[in-house]
Length: 124
Length: 217
Figure 1 (cartoon, each protein chain N blue to C red):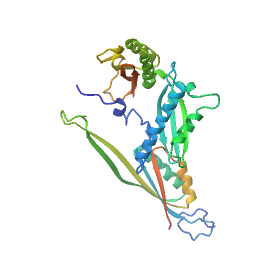
Figure 2: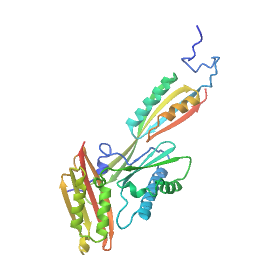
Figure 3: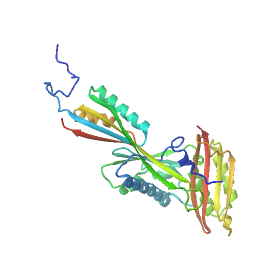
Figure 4: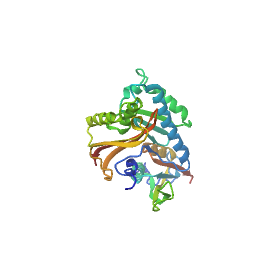
């Protein structure tokens, strides 16, 4: 049987083709909006799976909540009513094992406004 | 009685979208400041070049979306012909102005004009028109009625206009409002658009508030 052209684990750099060096790539997605974030996550993972990369699924970091609590009143008079404003930052982490060009392809496909994508490369 | 919350803020998650849509963590204040500069630049441009005694610009809102290297500015206007200068030039001048303001790192700017079908269904355009009339000393009750007539031409279910200040130059300021249809401010699923605009008259400032009830979710 001929050697499989598409290795299941591209991490094995012993294969004799023009295999680019595979990096461990961590994609961090942050956003204020959960729906957009989940959509970008799902698209990224689908794109990576289509290219048969090894993907560590979206790890959901704890949500950071920035709370600002202010008196509603401009003066000190009246019942002490308070406004509680919140800003929630959701963060997801996806790990891939793939050469860097492929990652650029994948991340350039799915970009929605309001989702910040950070890619860090940790060499194997 | 209590005070009323801004209906736009009240409905933000639900029937109202954010007008600036981006994410920033450490550079939040810088990006925020930039957004304000863009909006100011557009307002200034409209005031200087377009606004004259017979029209008032007609920009309803400016939406800014940021992706990693792209800034998308969408200008919703009721009268796009006013903003497009000579043929084929489009909004090049405006785009250049805004680009000069942005601390140009390598970010592309994309500016689009979006036309609104029924311009007088947008409270900002209506408020600006009322302001223009009031500044040229038309009687306020007549302007309110005419504005309501204009708005009713679009398909809206309710409109309320409130004008506050020295009406008709009176010494004692008061508040007057006119309503047509229903404007359910407590109903969150009601799509209500709101705008506040200040008209500068020789007697002082007249605050104009316009609520337009478009449809229910």
